Length: 406
Image (cartoon, rainbow, N blue to C red; front, side, top):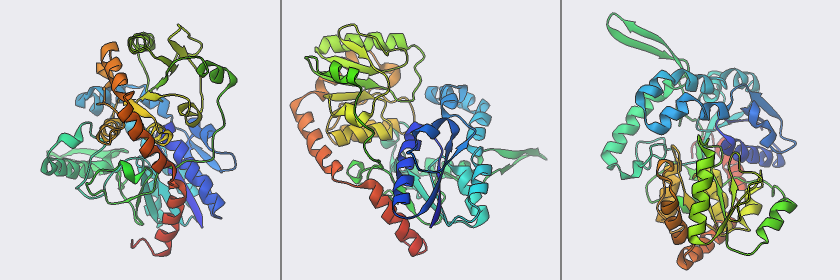
């Protein structure tokens, strides 16, 4: 089967979708992966990859992301063109790659690629890194603290979002005779599909609410390799070691973050390896800055991870059997912090604007309790037994074989 995989988003999207593409190739399918040019190096060797001229790092450090973090609706409206261009960049490359294709597997934000598939009559399987539900029921992970909203109100909000989604990747039109008439560039939304929905996460992390899709387990590839000799030597020093890193989330004042992290670690009596901008090479006796290291190997050597709550980092931490302290910055990261706390794998989440030495120290102390560590080890063993990438390949083959009727 000739398959196009479209991964629009950040590093956390490119890596799991690249793992899926590689596994589909191993199963005998002809696969081409479409992702951002700046993320092509993250994809496994041997997977044909087409770069898209849009940069998630630029979007995350730009005014649109800043407005989103502030909850500034006016700011989001002013910068909607920046976000629309980011999404729409996938349309033309997808149009070219879908010629002769038999299936598109698209990430949540690959709206324009889905639209291109619908234009060509190519079947679409949608794949999400959080339970983004086609129906109006279930959780609403992209809305921070959405789980606290009464279900009827949440359904109404989701219905409104569904009507807006086709306009996210741009639109034409304006006021005509006193009425607003807009035409979206693309008719697809965040959940549009023809042949089903997958969630690249462990079913153990889902709540009891209906989600309208198949949770395969996290998508991972072969081990990325071991740690550098310097980091191995560092973690061999005495003491309880933590990991602290916020992935691709930009930090406007990284020096202040390092100072408060060091203060929190000293209060608890632990040491920390930190992956933050400007931290590499820092060593104040408590906090040691390191460069890029494979999280799977790193998390095997630390007691817990303080992270932003991205789906991929969450999956690695859960699979490693270690606790998390989640410091969410935006969108679904709040939902992941909520789910980890509900399962006994983390203390209450700590939003980035509230990060302080006292609050961080208290949460680290909770995460290091014996009961939490036992619970993490138990869930970690169960998650490691899952083969999410293999389950996804089987779902794809079955969905195409039965025409998407499942």
